[in-house]
Image (tube, rainbow, N blue to C red; front, side, top):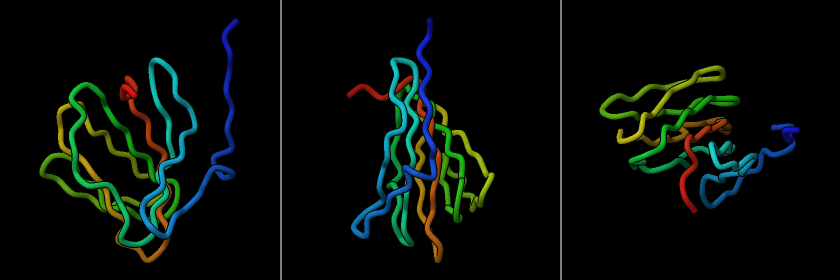
Length: 110
């Protein structure tokens, strides 16, 4: 029988005044699910994952997302895919806090 895992995302939201906070929700051999919680001006520098796709889904606030050479401002409900091998990153332009659900598959090796 398969195991099931449940999380209430609202209970996991946590911010840091120093830098964007990553909160792990699930980590399996096939995927990782995190929350990224960013205050105004915080984010993730552009970077590349050679073997992992990353999906960002905005739950709260607005974020500026970069995938390749394209940048988009997304609000609640906005979703973007950063395919493996493509540079990607995000920034919270503010003024409200940003909460993003992030799925990475396969998971990044630890």
